[in-house]
Image (cartoon, rainbow, N blue to C red; front, side, top):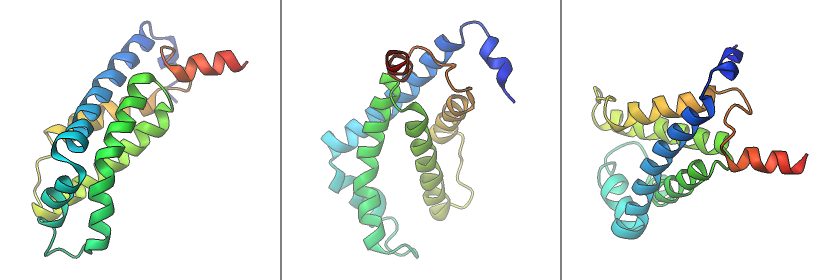
Length: 147
């Protein structure tokens, strides 16, 4: 459907820029949550305390709160490197669904225009690219080396 994208000039450069912006956003968020705030404080501040009175059980809130910082950090690094880009972008897209639901659970008319929408637009761009369109990646280099 989007095969016309393959013929666009500078598509790899556009993809590279989008990957790096998105990667840096998630690396920095993950870095802060892992090394400065700490995963335990992230879990308590953003999961346990805010959702204590919700339907979500604590046994589910703990692994989500502890795991999200590492997911953001690792997936952000993968995007910057251009390694497993589709998997990393998909995981981050699913994370955005989860966080959007969490915000909407607390505030039903949650304004998605901030961080969420910007990141979503960048993720969708990456996922809509035809396979092989982004040539400035480790994925591309490894696939050429293997063949």
